[in-house]
Image (cartoon, rainbow, N blue to C red; front, side):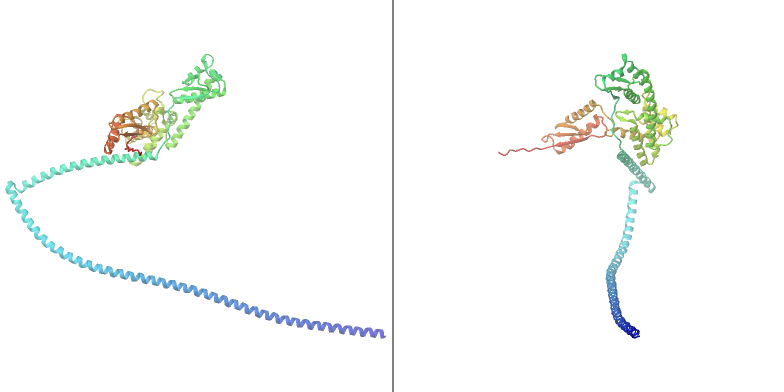
Length: 517
């Protein structure tokens, strides 16, 4: 029993202790919560105060910025007002000065008007006096000449008419000379513009083609037994084959450039193939001829396309291609024809003519040169007869027939083609002279210059485009040097034939030599 009572008492005591502990813990927690709440409240108050201070500081800064901006704007407006006021003041000063000037001018004008009025009155009196004097003189003249007024008028009119006719003749003569000079100057300008806007490549003439042969044994095979291969080749191609001691080369010679090109290509193919006999030669030549016909059509089409000329008849196109293998004094005829076409078009455009028609006439003017190897006659007539079959315009036909001056020009395009043809042929590098002719011309030029008194030496330079003359300074002064240059130039013009122009430079040198001993 005591044990139970003790146990109950222990339980009661333990429960009391537990209750006391929890009560103390709850009281401590409440106190801590109150303390934390107070601290949180104080922190919140402090944070709110700091935030309010930051907002107030930002507001003050913004207010300061706006104030500064307003101050700057106010200052700018104030400066503009000052500048406007200064401009107005200047304008007022200018207007005041102008008013003073106007007042002065008005006064001057009034004075001038008064003077003019006085002069008019004086002039009226003088005119009356002059009229009276003229009447008296006329009466006296009539008395002296025993003529009446009508007779005097008739004589005067006859004299005036004679003088007017003379003056009119002089005016017409001057106008004609001025028109001729202007026409010459205009033509020079048009030609120079056309030359400056177009330039073509230089070409060289050749009537032979060389074919490389790998060995002397191949040369023997080209010749064939008893020369049958070379005879068959020459008969099939119409060329001359020259085989000499030159190692590795066979020369094909022919004045027809198309046949020469066919022969060259055929011989190269035969050498590459190695099978050289009459049947194979004929087969290769036939195949090469067909390819050449196609190549001529291709070249002709390219030329027509380059010249931008539509509606060219098909039979004309391969002849244009043949001109691509034709040369005249070293100048490729197709390139020459294209050059003439463009030069003629440029000049026609400057003169207000049809540029496309001029270009067509320029391209086709030398078409006869594609046939002059096979047909008799000059290339102008051959070209004219050929083009007439295809209903080419009169300007093209007349240009083909008369571009060398053989027949009169019937259209304004023929002189253009003649001028363009001369420019294309005479430009530097267009045509090649033989070495002998070239050297002879240079010697003639130097001999002509050295034939003048006082000339010591003369040198032709720049391929004969310039001659430099050295004169004796003791015999020739500066004035005579200029005269010698002019005389040499005139003698060259009168006695020599040359393309373009030749510059004459006369040099006079004075040397003074002393020796210091």
